[in-house]
Amino acid sequence: MFETSSESPAPVRVVTEAIKDYVDRLGAIWIEGEISELNERSGGMAFMRLRDTSVDMSISVMCHKSVLSSVAPLPQNARVVMYAKASWYTKNGSLTLSAREIRQVGIGELMARLEELKTLLASEGLFALDRKVALPLLPKKIGLICGRNTDAEKDVVENAKRRWPSVEFEIREVTVQGAAAVVEVSAALSELEAMVDVDVIIITRGGGSFEDLLPFSDESLVRLAASCETPIVSAIGHEKDSPLLDLVADVRASTPTDAAKKVVPDIAEEIELIKALRDRAKRFVLSRLDLETSRIENLTNRPVLRDPLVMVTSREEIITGLRARVRALSPQATLDRGYSVVQLEDGSIARDAKNLKLGQKLRLRLAAGETNATVTDK
Image (cartoon, rainbow, N blue to C red; front, side):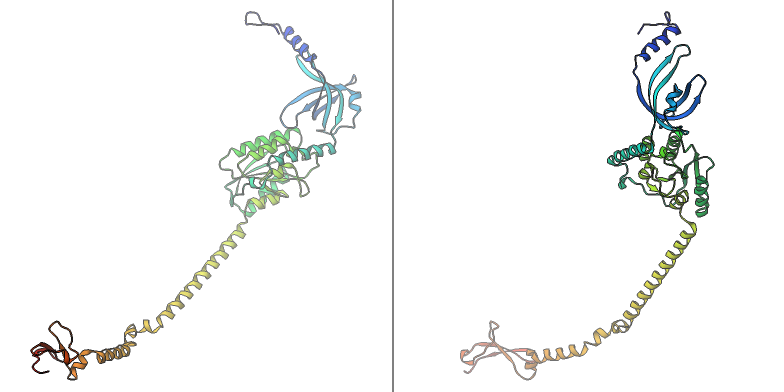
């Protein structure tokens, strides 16, 4: 490195040559990406751009046509790995990778990587059921991420509005295939997640090949979806397709139409349900009124409520008999028959004449009143 300042700046040639020296010291590396541009020019050289599969970044790559011809004809957005060395061109200050070997990543290898990523994310609990968020009964606004002017968008919107005409959408049309798909879908998802009035987000696209659906198994997109608090419905491809986004989403829909049915209730069904619940409530209330009316009638027909005095009159004879028995056993009844009770001065009853003494004062209790007496003869 060399020191510079505003008074002693480095010329462009010095800077670019220093960069070239640094880059030249770098060894060859293996790098993976998608080929987004491919131009074969005269002179036996081919030029391409290699794009990252998750973010909007790319780098220039050149190679001899013999290197390119060593692999099968590459389809658009082919995913490849290449062995390349970086080269810095001092004249225009550009960095290019010079590919020495190119290999197309086969479906088998992609599936193996996908399975490995699936196992990793599952071990972190990103697919656990207890992380799933329930969908709102009636969302105020639905966020929709879909391709531009696609049947999937029409299916979701038309079916949702048919089921609930007043439903509102916040639609983000993005690229749903190729290298740009992950970047655009992720940006749309982050934008909709930040909207307070969006209650649920649908991510959808039609069917496609295994490679076409790979962006929806991208690790960065799957982790972003897992971090969202807004419920997410995944409707990618057809029933047989199962990208990793399906596993991390709160609800998986088999088709875009199925997504609309899962998110929005059918207004006709809800009206019928309300009617049925209202009829059920009415029958319950009427049944309860009939039951309580019957109970009241049964209570009013009881003798005690029809004639409250029956509780007294029904026991009048018993009370009369008890009164007669009490009177018969009463000492007063004995006195009424002519008997009297002789008491000594201390109030005790005289029971034996032999125990009385001449001149002893006695008290006589008669049927009516009392009098005094004196023992004059034993």
